[in-house]
Length: 194
Image 1 (tube, rainbow, N blue to C red):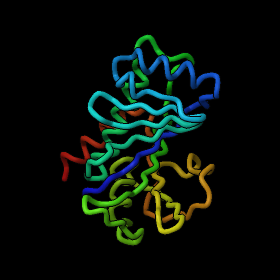
Image 2 (cartoon, rainbow, N blue to C red):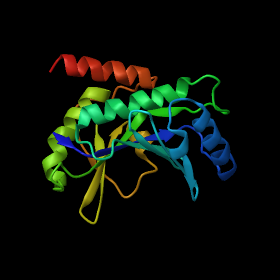
Image 3 (cartoon, one colour):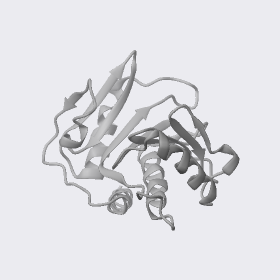
C-alpha cells in the first residue's frame, strides 16, 4: 500500500549536543548528503541524501523519509535501512562509529497521495506482514496519539523504552538480526517470494 512513511532506527549510543556539531560537519563532507541542506536545528541534525531521502538525527534515533513521495511500506523500510547501512560504512567512520539497532524499526504511517490518513485497524495486516518479513514472526507493537499511529517492529526487549505502546500478539518468536545488511537480505528474500 503506497503512502508517505517515516522510518525510525535507533542509534546505538546517543548523539550529544557536542557530538551533533561534529556530526553536521561529518555529514556535509561525506559525499552522501546535500551539504547546504545539512543543518542543525535545536538538538537535532537535518540532512538530505543526493536522491532525496530526508534524515533527522535526534539524540537516540534517526528518522528517514522521502518527502512528497508515496512508497509501499516494505520499500520505505528498505530505503531507510539501506541509507543507514551506508552511514555505518562511510570511511573514515564518524567517531564513535554510527551504528543502528537492527532489531527495532519504527514506522510512522502517514497519508496517501490524496492526503488521506489511515486508521490503525486498517494497517494491522500490513504490520503483521512487515514483522514476518523482517523478523520471521514474533509480536510487534503500536503507539497512538491524536489519531496518528506508529508501528514498532522487532524484538520486544528493544521496544521497552517506547511508551505508551500496545503489544500485538503473533505466532512464533522474533528472529533477531545481527546487522542492517541481514535485514536488507531478508527484505530482498521477502520481495522475491511475493
